[in-house]
Length: 370
Image 1 (cartoon, rainbow, N blue to C red):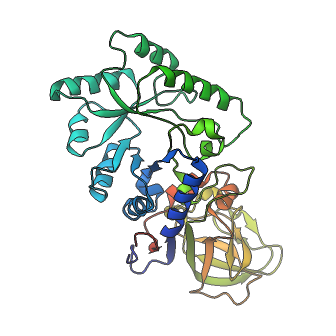
Image 2 (cartoon, helix red, strand yellow):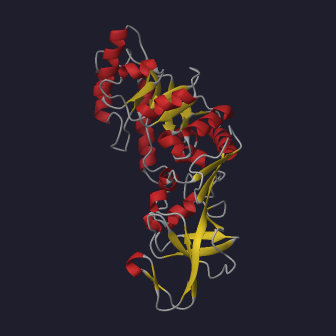
Image 3 (cartoon, rainbow, N blue to C red):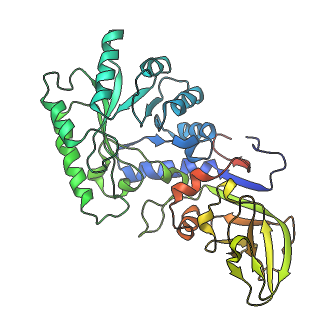
């Protein structure tokens, strides 16, 4: 695949599609017989839904999820074969029913009102259409509450007039294996699973895939793990890094005490300091919360950030890399300094790092469906 993005972009985002395929196979291994769906919402977690989805399809994925209907329609244009199932996690809104039929998609029904819409649509077209049903077992977010689930089960219609292909829920604390809510959610889901007719049960996303076989049910549906994100902070990451982010040095200078750097003068030099101004900022998704915290590398040398991240530029201390000059690249994200390492420095999570990466980079794809 040809590089994408502005011709003169001063930063490069390198995306290893083979690593995505490898991570998918690693998840299949971990699933121990359960099938593996793929969540590719937010434009394939910011990496481009077309190359990402094609790579995952080549690796064996047949079930995909997006967050929004528009994302799913775009994904269907990438994977037109009806053998690929595509679901929409955020649920069915009034007036959207025909789009699901037109583009051969299925909704995740999250509320009684959405179930009513889907039943009405089935009556209108004279046939059942597959859907997923999500139960809220502890997130208080999307899905039927336990009370609403009981009403559904006890209603005269029961769910028998629905073709529930996937019965789903979502874990709240799966990245903390010892958290008691994990068992509570599993118990609620298993109880409903025994009563509600469905084809496949699906509970675990990335982190819950590593809780144990009980959580894997018939399907797991990873997202961030496909893109190299760690499933839990207390254990080594079993996945391969997928991205590298390299940005050019625009200018270097030497300052001395008591000179300051950047907005707010939040860094004051205590002695001679060699400063490199780098062509990336919060407009590119290099988060402002990284100010005064982040590190990068140049030629294997660790360099700390100085002061605040600006919109378009960020400053680093290259005193330990005296040969660094304008035009050289520094590694903001690399195999040695991953999305999770950067997230820890910015007091956030790898998900935010990935999905915040902007469109001003030159995107270079290797391997996979490239």
